[in-house]
Image (cartoon, rainbow, N blue to C red; front, side, top):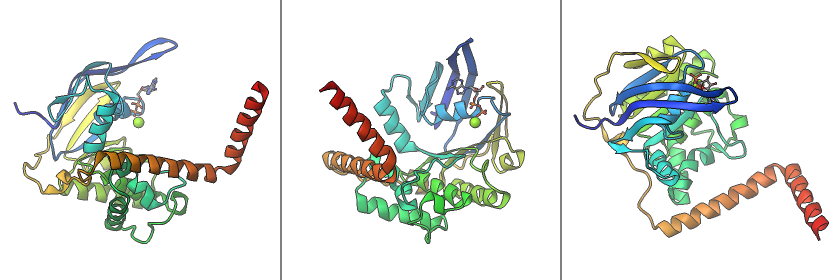
Length: 290
Ligand code: ADP
Ligand code: MG
């Protein structure tokens, strides 16, 4: 059989707690093909986010294997996993996870900083993505100057910055009112139609109804897997679009360091009191030692 886009085989995830080991994902095996639109449903605490985090290489199974395009992830180093995440996945979270001291454009461009795309190209692409998401007028706004629905659309744009062939959305409408939730779902459907593989976690049956395949999780196990969609074999190129150009690696690294320094300074300026107190602590500490 040809390799699936994503393939979990006998995957379990256990956590150590005071009461001993707790297994929250139990022997999950799944094949996910390119171009599918999947909803993962189940009650709170059933292991949906744990499964999503493993699919997105944000977490690793404690047992079993996980392959991305036929490549086993078990032996990968953290750097290799980060590279895999960057190349293939886009993430959307319930609470948006935007950086408060960055503008919409800067938030969207962030994943490309780590991919080593130069600043002008990043900004241009971030603006273009915001425009397609109906936020062309909001590019300089901070997250606090945007509504929940707008913030979630910024985070959708961010998920597409490096291509986002596979979009993982964990309860993307969970914090939104009905109308904004509908708009976010319309965007996810549009991405699916463009060829992106979309995997969505929800506990809302009405949201899950948008998907062509529904995987139900209960107590860490897959209890049903309905309606294997017919993943269109040849979709257009959108999902395979690669934004990062193969630029000089050295230049990219320098650029990333410069960007990190710039963000550190901005963060210090945004939290002046905290910075001052930290400095005071260091000064007193050093003075005491001297
Ligand atoms: P869902 O997203 O379906 O609500 P989760 O995947 O977040 O569920 O969590 C599944 C179970 O795993 C829960 O019982 C939760 O308490 C537990 N869990 C999640 N993350 C951790 C962790 N880091 N350490 C210990 N237990 C955890
Ligand atoms: Mg969850």
